[in-house]
Image 1 (tube, rainbow, N blue to C red):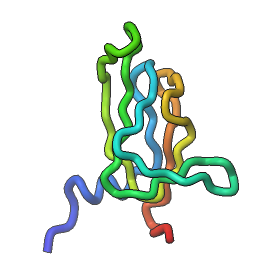
Image 2 (tube, rainbow, N blue to C red; image 1 turned 180 degrees about the horizontal axis):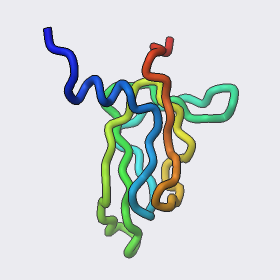
Image 3 (tube, rainbow, N blue to C red; image 1 turned 120 degrees about the vertical axis):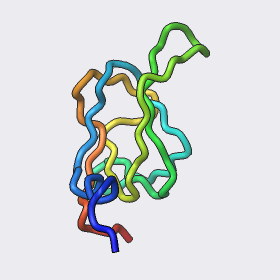
Length: 97
């Protein structure tokens, strides 16, 4: 039985802050809105990308993150973000229903 490595480090992390300025793009991300107005991730294979906006239709991807099932997204698809800004948070010890 293996304990540690990437899976345990990911479970300990509870927030996601972007490293670059840009615009958010949701990739295969299914969401619903909770009663607080946050988007909640409802699938396990969705990703969040930060892209540049050099000109319409020609986006350059700066970074990409796999999203945790049940994560609360603080920004919507297409929102502009600044480096260091909080875009998602989750409780690693709770399984959403």
